[in-house]
Image (cartoon, rainbow, N blue to C red; front, side, top):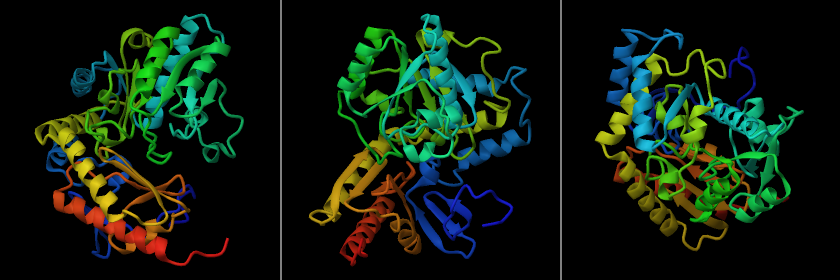
Length: 396
């Protein structure tokens, strides 16, 4: 790692020079099967021809003008997203953290509209919403907070997947304006709530006049077998945030709102220099086109079920495997011990995976994965975990 870079990362000893589909090649020519997709970003894999073509064509015409002027591609993208989500309006940013910042500001405006002096937002333990000061304060992970105190005030923490905890907050506090949750906690370990959880949250928000805000930065853009994870339920949010898979690697975030939430921002309330510029909007439009043309939303659901079944079969009865969870192409294998070393072992074996929450092997493969590639992922991960769990463990 270059000394010219700030030490914000501890990268693995590899650099990639090119990619195609679900595969990457490093600078030495070694080939890797990518079961992480840039942390749920490259849903269409690498070097997707439609996205590459859109980027090349737009870059030769116009990259940026700023939001001082109308941007045709941005307007087309907003209309497409509104149509597939049932939301009313969209604000474009550059990342998931920025999209969540916009959502937090909407909640504050909503609270002030309710004559709450210091509006609060209910958030969940184990969540991850970003690393800006507001979004890390919303995040339910002490490691993300450490060193950045004082945190931004106005967040009330409750256990995830616990409706009663939210109801208890409503009973004792009158300053709540919104609830901000992930439909599936990705960084928290691929934690999938009870099927009725989101609908229960929706009912509580309706009862108390709160905004229901869902962070779909990781779950959105088709990854769970629906365009958005909430669409597995009837619990349509008032505010929804997107990023990651929306641009397939081109930085873009979006905050979508409907109803009263869609009317809260006015000129001067919020903005972004780069958000929704012609280049990123063109890339995102190409991503939506490809997902629709290749029927990848349905494919994610089918492929995710197949991967889950193969992992369950490959790890059946293996001591040390606590649980195997899956929701479309978000899969987590929870072990009974820390397993961070598996990332490097997988790299050696030509497979890209991730470990989150210390003990959960996380898989976020691209939506374009073939059946054979999915089998290779399941077989490779099962073998790595079996070998790891059967190896002598160092004395604690």
